[in-house]
Amino acid sequence: MVHRRQLDGQTLVFGVHGALWGNAMTWWDHDTGSIWSQPIGEAIAGPRKGAKLEAFPVNFTTWDAWRGAHPQTLAMDVEAGITGFDLEEMLIVVDFGTEAAAYPVTDLQRLGVINDEVAGVKIAVVSDPANPVRWSVLSRMLDDQVVDLEVRDGLLIDVGTGSVWDPVRGLGREGPLADEILDSLPGFTVFPGDYATFFPDGRVWKP
Image 1 (cartoon, helix red, strand yellow):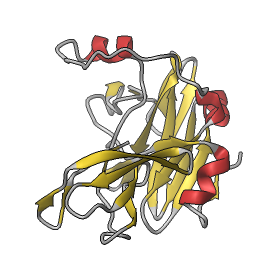
Image 2 (cartoon, rainbow, N blue to C red):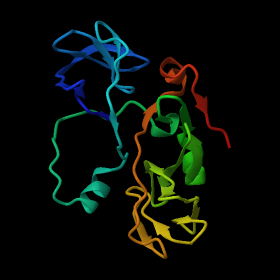
Image 3 (spheres, helix red, strand yellow):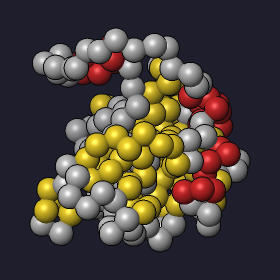
Image 4 (cartoon, one colour):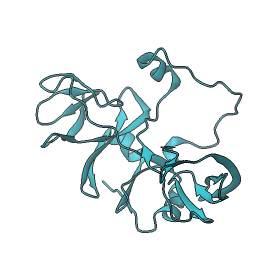
């Protein structure tokens, strides 16, 4: 998850607080000492409690796949151990403020794509058919047209025109909608047992 640091015209500076909330990192802001939740970008204690940062769209991918698509990228290289969790155990969360929905990674990898609507926004949660650990959240709107997506013969295809789409970047590759772009939307992962901590009224998608 990636958040904008600007809030009410001020650029905030954060540090790692050290404690976990909902099994996820917390930050503190340097000017007020408020404590923030990393996944939701919201202050959960202190003078700024209730304030929320804007979330940016992100993709979950591998370094090899990213470098292939963006060969000029520079990355910070630090020593790190092997992660202690398995992506297949997680939920992918889409939160638009008035409604939050969660999508089990196991269901997504089995289906390849989930077409849904959250807070009136028509979305698709997509797993790359060529690499199921890569996922993204895309808008299904092109102007006034709604795109319904499915995985067919290992390709991400829209049902209406048969156009082929890049499953991570949302770019039309082939067909009548080639070169069109489905906007990327924010999403992040949580452990199933912690979802209700962040979103007590959130729903979990079921097939």
